[in-house]
Image 1 (tube, protein in one colour):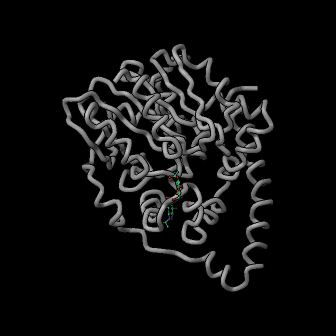
Image 2 (image 1 turned 120 degrees about the vertical axis):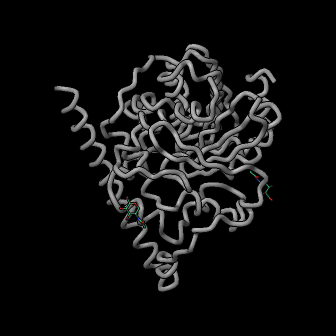
Length: 337
Ligand SMILES: *[C@@H]1O[C@H](CO)[C@@H](O)[C@H](O)[C@H]1NC(C)=O
Ligand SMILES: *[C@@H]1O[C@H](CO)[C@@H](O)[C@H](O)[C@H]1NC(C)=O
């Protein structure tokens, strides 16, 4: 079979699995909502106005700016530290925003110029139309263009979740732009695919990736109850803090979901790619991650020649929130600071 046909075939398979999951999730949510009577039905359709950044975030002492990249895309970014320090770029995940990273930005701002940009589709950054504009190649290219637009020869990457998947690829595409890489709870994408085909546990844990392949229904579910799921993704957020996420992630949730849909599209840019990451890479993994099982770690090993793994016991997907001291300590050792 030609590659093109194989891609189409695989795309259809994933779509079919997505439909399968929808056929379970939608009836369950419907019955649950109806059983709760009028109150729960009303709650399902609740909407809020999240056009304004809540005070709890606007008063955080970080600097906000915009930057335009060579491709003409505009990104909102927050930064802390002096520009004469080496560059550290933080790549956030799904569904996440800069607010999560305020402590880490402060932690490293005396030794780095720390930059976190809202990725395409999020918050105040550009939101290109078309699912294929969320293909990995574009996401990787954004990072490279931002390093260049900031006027730095290279950067250290710190990344989580989707940001981590991107951080795995940046040094493969642009080895000259990357110093060191710290990745939290995120696999190399091709390792995830391989693991999905071999490991039923990870396959079941990835059910939402398939659900996201189909249109409308994921949006409807995430938007229900005024983005109720965003409250459940992280522990210990006040309702005002949850609203920060609604502001940054939920401006139009279709774009962040398109990251998952873009996986199976064709890229519009042509990038050369190395097989392995040769830069020093620290992989930190909370072993209680319910979406990305630690079984993925061995699958990642063949993708890096110089990798150190730190398994954090008892920590969830949000390892940097659960165990900040362990994470900082490991990072300090790894970064030699
Ligand atoms: C969100 O973006 C999608 C894709 O461009 C668009 O079709 C949809 O109408 C937008 N939704 C809202 C509420 O603006
Ligand atoms: C969440 O709050 C509880 C109670 O206030 C506290 O014991 C716990 O350490 C907090 N967890 C995190 C991750 O901040």
